[in-house]
Length: 490
Image (cartoon, rainbow, N blue to C red; front, side, top):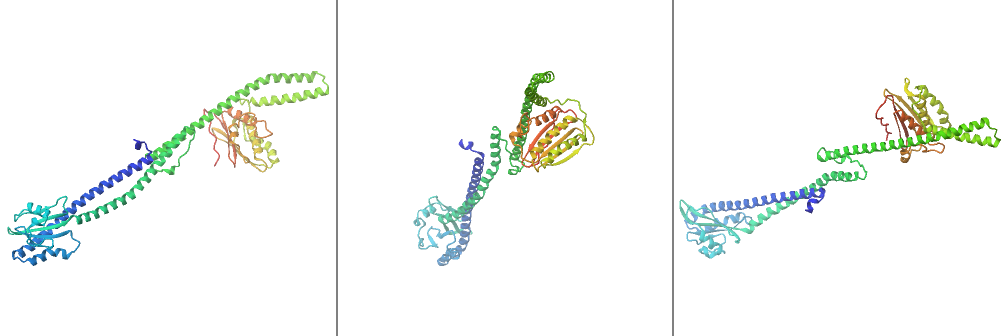
């Protein structure tokens, strides 16, 4: 049973090669058997033709008892084609079954009884038909070295004797061996051509299936590897298997990406709830402390050192209040609709920062009219993204802004050159207090995320060695599933 458990890449060539060998053997055997039958039939036909021709020529010679002329007649076939005929000897008997003449007179002396020439001739003497109209008589025993074909020498019902044509089986086997050898060489040549083709075909057929099997086994480990379509570009079952695997791969990747986004959204939501709760808890005592300091400054008479200390405390608590306020982003505030002038104001605000470090700023805005988005919040998102981009681009870098409003959504894209973001940075990009520069507080992108999310949109980032891109998509009407941001070009 081990043969059935072999890999198909071995099993197919083995079975295919076995079938080819079996077919070649069957065809060769059939050809050899047919060749043997044809050779025997040709031999008998040759014997009968020679015998009838010779018997017809011998009848008048024996009738006139011309022995020497009879010897010439039986010797003629051996002088015309010496050494090539299957015929070994021709023997002529009279009606008394004695040697009348022979092509080999030394072996078959004249007037020697047939039974005296050997066991084979004795057996012929017993079974030989003596009628004038007798047909061809063939004597061939398995252990005998010769085949004997006997014909009567007769005309008009008168029989003068018998003609015996002797064939040597070794010559017959020589010719048969030659045919057998040629058949074997042809079969080997066919096998030498077909077996490598079968082996290549089996390997070529099973290589794609083996690759699919290996990749399916790796799916459990989270490895989703593509298959090269050029490996098997055909539409048969193997090609359909390729297509099915690729379809499954696409579904699994979509599922993995969806799960990743779900985990990210849940994590961000949890962080948001946590920071909002903390911020609310901090706000109450913070407000009391600020009120107490304000009261102390208005009604107290502190000395200069105490006054300086109170001022430091007030500034510190004010900074804490601003940080807490950033964590409590509320997008449902009242604000006028967003227009092109709002974006132009942002451009004017960030231009000095760009000029300060020599950053080139490209600006493309396509807003024909105002759109139903709170201008204050959108301006804040754009300012945060632009300041981060200018800082990341560095001296001599490039920053590009593109804004487009369609009938259903507002798209804002901010791109910059410079050092790319690492994968671990992209994974935690919009979490609070995640700093990517020494001067930031880690809240700018968090605020952007909070604003965009509360407006029902999406914000995403992509980065490669040439370009880093932030894409904001905000629907102009409520939608159930936010659109995916476009991908960076390769």
